[in-house]
Length: 534
Image (cartoon, rainbow, N blue to C red; front, top):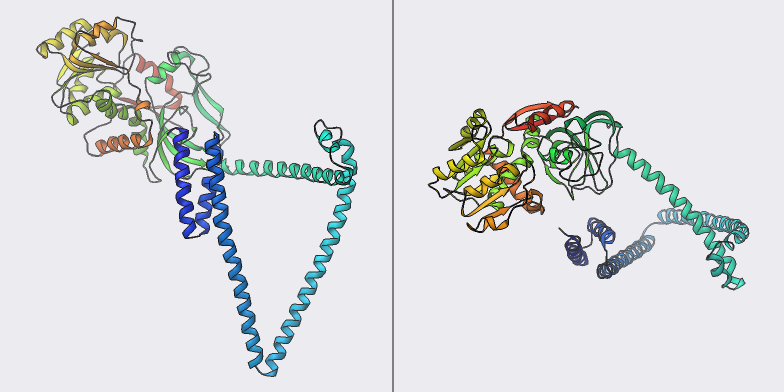
């Protein structure tokens, strides 16, 4: 949601809350409105929203002042009523009771005398402090008059009021110093409270400080644990999913800042929360799509990172499953609808059909969409796995060239081609993809395992009206309701057994380099997962 849309939503919420407060006052409602006003003021970035903020504040002040006046009036009426009752009581009680009441009144008078004495002492102390301030003002006058800007302002004030101005300036400076010291001390205490004794200062991470091959990967055990802001949570990771995008970042295909901790999906437990966090608490188990999670601890801002709150009862197996399936599972369920809306009996070609996303696509296409799946993979074992997951046609890319694969696809489709190609190979497979695409067909390229697709004449797509789509999962699920919808759909497919997540191997965090080498050599099938040391 854009900042403007968020502010409009906040303004509407404030209007509704103020209308409710106007008819029914409560401390809880006042606190809610105060929090909304603070959030609105923090984000108001133009004059229009600043004007709206001023209007909301004035309405809040007017309504609360009205209620406070009523409360004060009722208190006075109540006291008056009690006095009337006492007077009536005096006139109807016996002499003994009257004397008791007289003693009580005398005691009250004595208390009043003590209070008046304290007031007088307080007045004397204030006068003494006034003399101290006058003395300070005398010493500060020489200093202040030397300050650029202040000396010009003070010389414009007549002598009769100049000393008062200097006293006020001195008091203001003292108050600012006290406020700074108090705030600094409070912030330090809050930070210490967020980072409890159970959270270490150092952690183990995978990191690279330069781009390149697997050799640039380092396993460090003394990397600082991140501190969190008021809007963040700290997650103690349990499992992290391994994806090909880590390869793209490490090789420099996609630009990133260095040094960089890989990782794009993980699951774990919330161990600290910022002051402004309302939807998560310490002990919650979560799965999330975010970076820097090949590490024991990751800070997460739920406003910008997609998080699934699993509650506090998620098991270890569930945490492993959610870390394995979130990115690739969402890629599958989103792409078969939004990148290309697959229909029943469509012919669909899937490259790298035994990989993490490939196997998910094969299952969703065959079981959910009832399409005919043509699987392309680099070994017979991988093709056997694709067949077990629903593929009808199997083509081995280590035995056939991509031109030969294209010819085979056209034969099995009677020359019509396929309605869609889901391709994660890229450069080496683009010619084959164009050749096998049917009229009005679609090529969905979501990976570049063999390299970026090289430039080609776009007119090559024209003859058959082919669409070439380069989708970005995070753009599709940017809005929270869309993410929630597809996440619910994904977990429902898993629960109903329509989707099986094949976790082929779990590596310790320190062995990520080994996992990366195996995956990049295309020696793996299914999903690889890292287990994070606890």
